[in-house]
Length: 423
Image 1 (cartoon, rainbow, N blue to C red):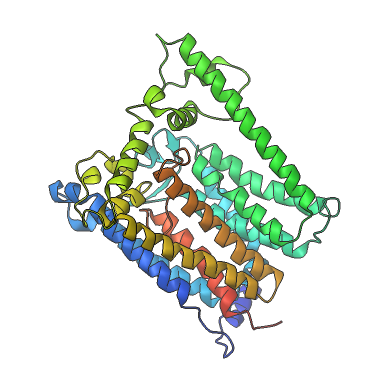
Image 2: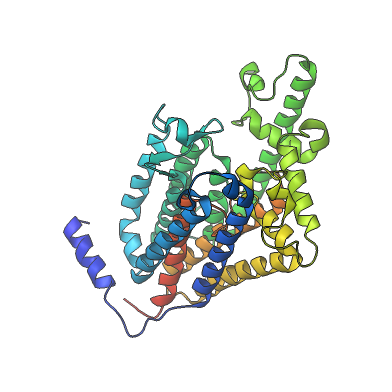
């Protein structure tokens, strides 16, 4: 599509229509979650904010307010555009989002400020930084929806062409993200793609095969981890968990880093393998959640984050739910879960009311992506899954993440608004 044609088409799609209207339930829940996020980001860093000499303009809670303000604009713009427009530009958007995923891997491009904990995941933009993996989620959603909309889906044999395209489209950004390395952003892409395949009525044999492959992968990870433990015990005197010694000692291994193996071991037996590292974070998170009781200790009164037992580097993002649970207790946690429940169930309702396959695929894909984020983040907080660093939508601190979430939810709103507009 030529640029002039795309501009004309966009102008047509932005024209108001009397038959479309807004769904206010999801935006209200998202706004409430955003307010909760700002409040508890402030609380998680309350003692730091009071001790720091920097002005409140530089504090994370205020930055989150700015991100949410920009996110509202993104949400409104995407909501006003008929979602069919994105089908026309899906390929261009996809390849445009691959470019920063490559750029961030160039040595030195991120700089010291944007390269954190041995990973290159951010591109510096003045006082802020941009995380390319967040826009990649939107790109994968659009390209998967586009392929499935244009392809015939039935038996596995009939769907081989589409499955081949999808494998390539999902694998390419996943590989680039894993090279950063950023496991948390990569693992949310397959569930989203599989949910969209499921509503496309692909043969159940495909999902049975995928389940078998997943179980084989789990077995391979367990085998790899056991080899890692054996290597540690055999080299106990000289072994350093932070140097990647095991990665360099064997020619055959899974594409995992030693720090990721450490996270698995910390989850399995934190007292033995990592009592003062990652295991410490999860233990303090459990203490935070358990000490909140029914109504909590009160806003800014939680001792775990205030005294630094729950590390300040993660309390306002990865473990924000633990701060909420400690300060607002079971009722506060239940309120947050209820708000997410509204967003997720309303997403399913919108998918069911969509006028075409594309609308259903977009709404289901976004809902599945949010469900993975919510489940894994909260399960990580209460010790049900290993620590992955997956943030909580609209609650955890993060600019790129907030903006991508707003764009994704804007797509769902567009599906609702234009569900009665037939071609």
